[in-house]
Length: 479
Image 1 (cartoon, helix red, strand yellow):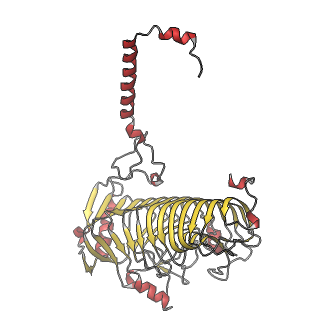
Image 2: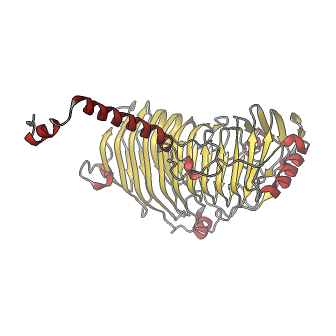
């Protein structure tokens, strides 16, 4: 121990004990008061705090990306669907009531915004649009039921970045709840339900009698500041939630359910969108739980609308045919800066899957995948190719994707069937791939990694990775 310095002893000698105690108590009181007065600056971000404008010293919860949307607005004009003739008996069509309500509430967009409440009951409806500065609020016990009449799902033009309907040539069915060119639109509530009653559509697909691409449950296009939260979506005819050409999108606290054999019932597909937060959701589906896309072959290349700055965290669920998170294969506009973390996936075909193909073009760059737990997942990590899935004969076989910077860490997979399968394309190999702290258990002793057209490094990986990734420890790609 360092000896006490003489000058320190001389100074302390001037302090009498009562005076020293007084200073100590004064310092303690000031410290407590300063903590009390500054508490609000350090509270975790409360997404549903009602406030007209955020305080300049507000600090977002570092464990949430919901701050992309900002403060939940207070709508000045609040009405019920009942005021527009709505009947919640599960039999009466409310399509006209929802259209009448939205058209009426458009007038309040620049006058404090509006909120349409859907009370307890079963509200049968065909497709309807949303408007800006608007909240669709489902109260506890409220169920919006999708119409079983295909005529109430009108046809709309295909997305420019797809050039046609995803399943069939030409036009596509509109989503049940649709929005185009919106600002500050919210779909939320007290865990109400939107039920797409999709079996009619799945039967058409299974029977090969589908004439036009099925509609999504919710599709929001060309919009910004979008929030979808605190609801249950079930039985979507096709993809469940589809933000496309959007920015500042938050999808939070959702339960998304579909039969595990229901075709193409993706949970959430972020498509050609930027600044997207998907967190705290539970999903069971017949396709990817979450997917990131950006256009299809020559149409996506021409439109060039990338998906970037996307965070996917705290997602749990199962999909026996697809993956927990899928990137691609429609990625022709480019995908970059994607963070996937804190996921739990079970009884699924794949945990994380990155998909591309000849003709896609575009790029995938700077993908971070961290802290994923899997159980009974057939292939924990898969890079796939050769889906041979193109919109028409105009695709360019020379359009090859550029893929660089895939960082995968802290993965534990229990009772897996296969080791990771990483298959790049000739002339479009995966570069800068890092696996760190990855453990795959339950494999047969003969199970081995499969790698083609992949380069990178690993650190603390079991079982032993393929030779293309065995630049262990010293390579900079895992830093």
